[in-house]
Amino acid sequence: MNPESLLPTEEQYLFCIRCGQCVTECPTFRVTLKETQSPRARVMLVRKFLEGELSPSPNFVDQIYSCLDCLACNAVCPVGIKPADLALQMRAYLHKTQPQPWIKPLVFRVYFTHPRLIELSMLPFVLYQRLGLQRLLHSLKANNLLPAQLRDLERLLPNPLPLRPLRASLPELIPARGERKRRVGFFLGCFQNTIFAQGSAASIKVLAENGCEIFMPRNVRCCGMPHLGYGELDTFLELARHNIALFEREDLEAIVTDCATCGSTLKEYGHYFKDNPKWSKKAEKFSRKVRDVSEFLLETGFRRPARKLPLKVTYHDPCHLRRAQGMWKQPRQILEASVEEFVEMEGADTCCGSAGTQILTHYETSMAILERKIKQVEASGASVLATGCPGCQLQLGLGAKKRGLKVQVFHPVELLDLAYSYSSDDSQEERC
Ligand code: SF4
Ligand code: SF4
Image (cartoon, rainbow, N blue to C red; front, side, top):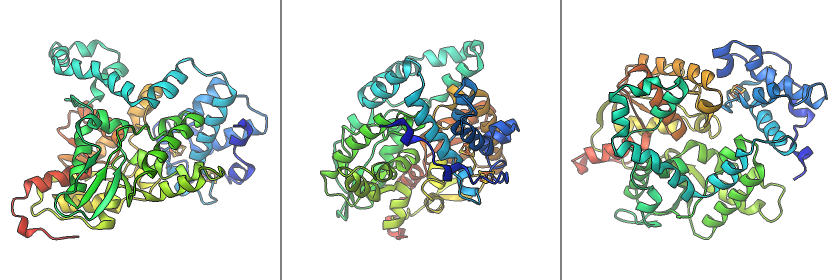
């Protein structure tokens, strides 16, 4: 791929009127109060680079990578500038034209393209928890000796981690419960396979409960979002081709996922292949079928549980569900059907600071954004926080631990599954 073809066009940056509407929406600006950490500045940086006035210095690269891709700026710009998209395009260009750290190909071309490697890499953490080493470390308060970033990384993972990855625990074809009404594919994300297996097992149960036969291919690979985020476009396209080919062999009404990030990426496959005569139709057809699980359940009508869980629940909008996919009513409707009390928190749609790897690359900013978010969760008075993205689940779980809150984090559909189990009188159930 010619690197120049990756560069933004003049229309994408030249018409920025510097109005500043995007500035106060930007989480990195809100916590740093630095103009250089705002979308407006990122647009200007890109422009100055393209006009030859800036070189790709480490500082320039860092500003481009400090964007969380939360899409808040894209949504508010009155002239249609998309600063988040510009940042991603610049990353792809820089990846092609600048020297990259040696570890990058290993992570993106080897690790993320082999699900088995991802699963194996979780094993030390599973053993660390299951052999009681984590409990020991915490009881001795030895974790407090770690530097702050390492301490937070240690606390990031939920406890307990699943013993087995989900793709090894379920068959490829999962039958509907009762009469089969639909046949769907299930796209199992890397996080749900290894860290939130219980959440995706719940999504699959809910789909089966609602008359779906589910095809969950074992050799599905990463959706490619980490590659897009780090400018590894060629590997992204390779993964996309693999995943499209895997699902196109089956006759499926929809391809469902319970990961907001996977869902938004899969829905973009069509866009990334639009100029490829061999793949454009297939990719477009694939993307048209992709549904977030809450979107699918509302679209097709789901069985309401007879009894609601006696819980007070609030909800955090994952950026890649609300802004990238326009889904915000659907998860709330699932929650309203599943729990006795649903409360909105202030700033439900602001980014939690996760953005996949910001805890590794921009730790201070990521934690400052998280702290604001967790204060809003606390103010809601909810005992459960629901959200539909594994990255957000990890980050918010960490935030709750750091603040000493007793708030548990669930996927909305996991709560629906729990409500089904909690309901004993089937005769009271009605359809949406
Ligand atoms: S995507 Fe989010 S973090 Fe990035 S510039 Fe826009 S508002 Fe700021
Ligand atoms: S990117 Fe859009 S919202 Fe932001 S300053 Fe420029 S014109 Fe205004």
